[in-house]
Image (cartoon, rainbow, N blue to C red; front, side):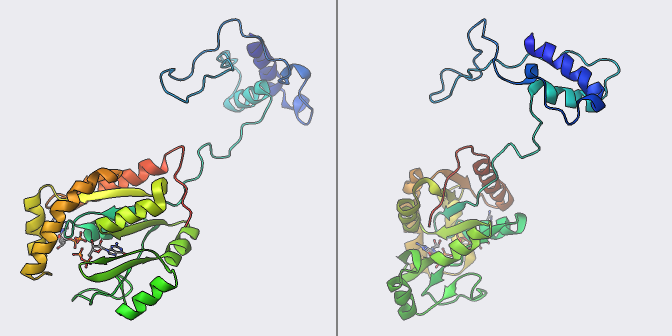
Length: 292
Ligand SMILES: Nc1nc2c(ncn2[C@@H]2O[C@H](COP(=O)(O)OP(=O)(O)O)[C@@H](O)[C@H]2O)c(=O)[nH]1
Ligand SMILES: Nc1ncnc2c1ncn2[C@@H]1O[C@H](COP(=O)(O)OP(=O)(O)O)[C@@H](O)[C@H]1O
């Protein structure tokens, strides 16, 4: 009642701006003595959710219908005056923070294909180019697919602690340069890391819950093997190792935050799902904080 009376007065003043402008609000509009609640505070949130607070303030009653002559601007200023403060145009949601996305999954599942499409679809994504001692494959580009270095150069990088994580993957060193992550996060970019399963496990130890871990799978084991054969990058011996490893790797899915199916011919759907995960993570109230 008090507030609605206050509102009526404020609206009246708002209709005659020359009388109000520049003057401090009269005491009745100042929030000195809030009205004593006549009934228990209304619960704004479910009592069954742990950690949620009950509001101790009664919500203000709805404003009375505007006077037929009041325009929108007067109504707006009247509401401001009734509340005793100007409405802020500052964003209500906290700004999105750069995040780290770790994408892992068996060899040949489509990690590179998904990341490439993701970068085409979305701005502000930086795929961290990792360093490797493996030989360059036909079609691969230095600095785009990997930084191709000798074993000696890789060992020096380890010694200088330049790598966030490294591993011997199928007999070759692979590692993530720390500085690259720092540089791109400082620019506000989201970081995408592509690692094998053991790399993801190590990163989980290093980054904990500060990064988002996505496990990419094919729709079936059969589909994965056919995809690897079709890629024609492995000898039959290497194929056997990768397929046997993949069978073991799927068991580690439970250590990830999300699983995304990259089904045959459905790359776009997989990319959309990854985008949805990014969007959901960006909308989180309690954001993950990265410190590298
Ligand atoms: N642990 C770790 N794994 C990596 C890194 N860079 C790439 N990998 C992984 O190494 C594995 C083998 O990579 P690659 O030889 O390119 O073969 P592909 O998976 O068959 O394309 C893939 O699962 C990559 O995700 C890294 O820096 N650290
Ligand atoms: N959804 C899909 N449907 C059909 N082929 C795919 C799909 N995703 C990826 N591929 C193909 O499968 C092969 C392996 O993909 P790649 O991205 O190299 O896998 P990874 O990086 O996980 O080893 C490539 O030839 C790629 O073009």
